[in-house]
Length: 160
Image (cartoon, rainbow, N blue to C red):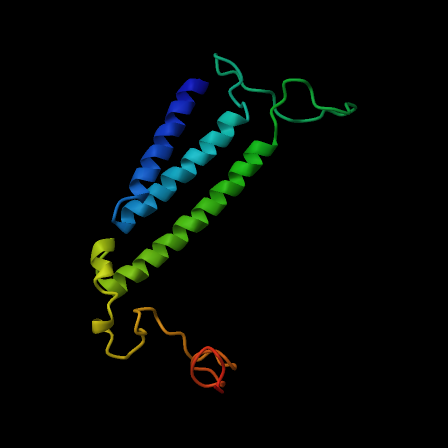
C-alpha cells in the first residue's frame, strides 16, 4: 500500500509542477491544487497510517478511563491535524489565486503569460504611470525621500 501511495504522490507532484510551468493561469490553479493533494498524501504516508502490507491501521488514539498512556499501536493524532490545517491553507491559496487570475484576466483580456508581457510596455501607458525603465512609479505615499511625497521629487530627499 505504501508503494502505491508513493507512486501516486510522485505523480501528483510531477503533474502539479508540470501544470504550474504552463503558460495558462488556469493550469497554474490546477497545478496548485494537485500539489496540495500530493502534500496531504505525503503527510499521511509518512505518518504510517497504513502500517503494514495489508493496510491495517492503528487503533484510535483514545485513552481509556484509568489508563495513563495510549495503547501501543495507536494512531498518531498529529498528522490528521496537520492535514486539516494544510487543507485550509491550500483552499485559501487556491481561492486567492482564482480571484487574482480573474482580476488579471479582466485587465489584460488573456490568461496567456506571453500575451500579457506585451501589455506591459511604456508605449501603451498614456498616463505616464510607468517610469523610463518600464517599472511602475509609486506615488502618493508621502514623506521626505519618497517619490511623489512631501519631500518632493526623487529618492534622495527634496534638497540637492
